Image (cartoon, rainbow, N blue to C red; front, side, top):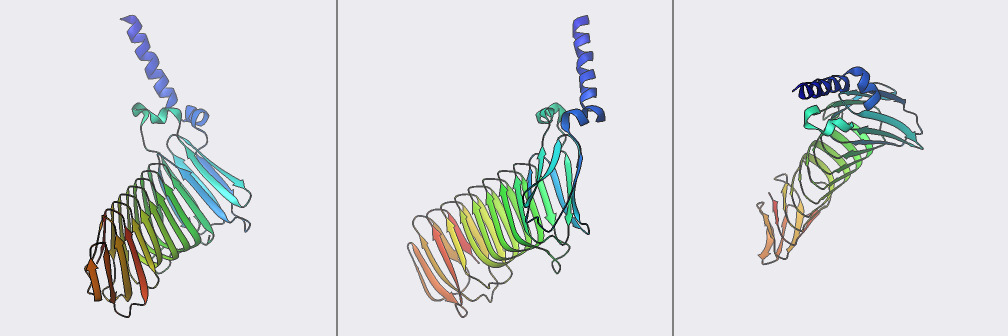
Amino acid sequence: MKRILIIFLVLIGCYLLLTSNIMNLFLFGKNNSEIQLTKRIDTIEVDVSSAQVNMIPEDRDNIRAELSGKGKVSMDKDGDTIKIDYKRGFFSGLQFFNQTPKLNIYIPSDYSKSLELKIGSGYLAFEGPSDDEPISLDSLSIDMSSGKVDLKNIKAKEFEHEGSSGLADIDTLTAESASVRMSSGKAKIKDLKGKLDAKISSGLLDIQLSELTDPVELQASSGQIKLDLPDDADFMLNGKSSSGFIECDLPLRDKISEKGKIKGTSGTGKHPIDVQVSSGHVKIY
């Protein structure tokens, strides 16, 4: 009985030490990092998992990361790239110690080059000031294996989203070229402007175009793609399917709808919409 009591007291002592600020510094590293942003920096890379991350653009000339909770955040320069990494502590994976860390990353609001986000799990949010004044970038790429990403009020020359699972929720995105590649999971993009090239092997891709100004290419091996177009969109639809299904709820002129094929024109037919489905479902409405 005494031995069990001693073991219990030792476990409590270890827990108090491990959750104290002193042990947190030794076991989990420093909580705050800061680095100057120079004109030579072309890319900011963020690699995080198992944390709640908020990226906050504001009037500043450096990048600052503030961590609340277990783990270690590091920030380094590598040539023309600033790399921001968050790593969990060893005991963070145990349910006994499980509290989601919060990481705030502050970046200059006038940063306009490349941003690369890699999310293993957890949550990441990034929002520009408004839809009239979005954060403007040369390129924005997302690589996610799980978790959730919320983006809002973004403008980028190139946008890339690659997901193996997880959920991406994107609101008000303008891109000269938008590429979406998904093996599973769910992505919802609202108020998209620009050229779109989307390919999914499974999962759900739900896209709403506020304007149709460029070509659209959709390819689904399985899963579902939903494309919401303006009622007055000018497009020419060319769809082919092997075992899947393509439907278009918008009225089409010179419509051809038969097994494995759908074609037709809406408005002037200025912008091509090419759809290929091997299985699954593509709906245009």
